[in-house]
Each structure stands twice: as C-alpha cells, then as structure tokens.
Length: 375
Image (tube, rainbow, N blue to C red; front, side, top):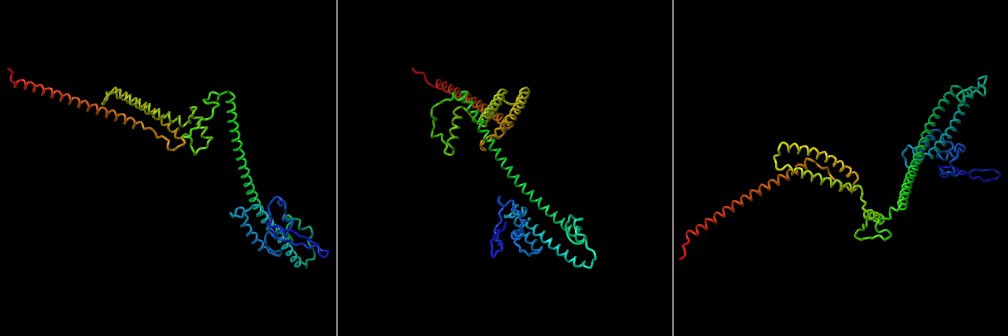
C-alpha cells in the first residue's frame, strides 16, 4: 500500500507541506493507521488526482480490486491491502458525494429564490437518517443511493472478515495439530523409557546372555544400507529368540499346510485302492467336509498374514481344497499303476524263469539219452 510522508518546514513564517509517495506497509506499526483521517493518503493509494470524478475513482478501485481482492485468484491478492484500498475508496467516494450533494443543494437554492419562506434549518434531521440535502424528493433519492452503497460495503466487509477468519483458523488448526503430534511422540518416548527403566530395576535384563560383555559384531552380518543402531537392535532381538509377528504367523501357516496335507494323505491310504466300498465312500466324503472347513480357517490366517507382511513378494495365496484332494487322488492312482506294472513284471519274470528251467531240464535229459556209455 501507499502511505504519505509529510515533510514540514517553515518558509517565510509559513508552513508548507510536501507529500512524497512510498509503499504502504501492513506491518504492525501501521495496523492502527486510519486512512479516513488523511484524504491525501487515500488519493495517493488509489493513484488518482485530487480533482478526479466518480468515474475515474471507480475505474481506479476496480483496477486495484482485481489485483488485491482475496477472491481474484491473483498472485498479488492480499486481504489487508484490499481492505485499505476499499477504505480509501469509500473515503474519497463519500467526499465526492458530499460535494455533489452540496452543488445540487446550491442549484436548488438558486431556483427557489422566489419562494417567500425558507425551510427550517433542522428539516434535514427529520428523516432519512440525516442523509442528503435539498427537497424531500432529492433527499429520498440520495438516501436510497446511500442504502445501496452501505449494503455493498457490508457485503465486502463480511467477505473480508470471513476470509480473514478462515485463514486465521486454518493456521491455528495446523499449529494445534503439530503441537498434539509432538505431545504424543513425547508421551510415547517417556512411556518406553519408563518401561525400560522399570524392567532394568526388576532385573529382567540380568539373564541375558553376554551381559557386561562387548557386542560380537560380525562383518558378514552387517548391512551397509542400515544404520548401526537399527542393526544392533535387530541383532539383540534375534539372538534372544524374538521374531516379528508376521514371521511367526508365516511359520504357523506353513506348518498347518503341511499338517493338513499329511493328514489327507494318511486318510486316503487307509481306504486302499479304488473303487471304494459304500462305507468307505461315506467316510471319505465326511472327512473331505472336515478338510474343507479346516482350509477355510487356514485361508483366514493367510489373509491376516498378508495384511501385516511388509514385503509384497512374501505374501501367500489361498489353499484350494479341491485341488489338494485331486493331487492326493492322482498320487495314489499313480502308485497303484506302478504297483500293477511291478506285479506284471514279477509274474513275467517268474514265467521266464520257469520256462528256462524246463528247457534246461530237457536239455540235460537229451544229453544223457544220446551220450554212449563208457566201457
């Protein structure tokens, strides 16, 4: 904004004032400054001459409003500066309206010279909130214009106040959130430190292996992409049997899968070769229903594991019971086929051995038959 600096000096016993323009500031030492008390500052701020008319005043105000209005989306938007521009505009406008009303009153007075009586001096205060000059009709018209101007100014004041309140409340809210976050972090840090101190006082760290000895740092275990503190903490937890929740859950899921597959394989082996008898078929179907329920519960554990595992590549897929049953059935069919082929091979071997023995026996008999007796 522009403010006026008044330089006074005495020349020939008279005081002459020089107004030099400089940028107005919205800093703290000028927040209480009232433009309405210095008309020359208003002219300087709006960038208009002292003898301007209402059209020039309005044009200058619109130009500055486009630059500083909060809703103009301009880079130079500034609510405080716009408020000062608006105050200067209203001050100059009020001065021009008074001059215009005064001129109209003088003209009407000249026209009504022939009137023998004059209106009482207090007539202007009988209505219209004391606004306007001249006849009641003229004062009524001036009062209507005054109400329009006052309503427009009230709307602008409301928007400016609302925008200022929003910006201030947003800043306060951000500060409150930052303070709350810092407070929570401090509380957690103090809580952890208190728990560690309490555990040390109770002697819960006395049974740790290697107490009072330097840490054994192996270069092969060091990760260059991890800070030393994190590496040492993980090493201490690992040496004392601590495992993250997702690791323990992964071990549990994999062991459960192996157990269900082993039980399914054992149950299938008790029924022998296919086709099953009616009783065996009922027992097998009942066991398959139980197996499917166990798989549903296992898949829920797998979902929980996938939600907490930190590595995407470590996630597990659901187990499909029908596929597991089909694999077991195919495995036993293949075993039965192999046993059948093995049996046929053994039988063929026995037949060949028997045939060979028969041939050998007939060969011996033939040799004895045609061999002459020795003298």
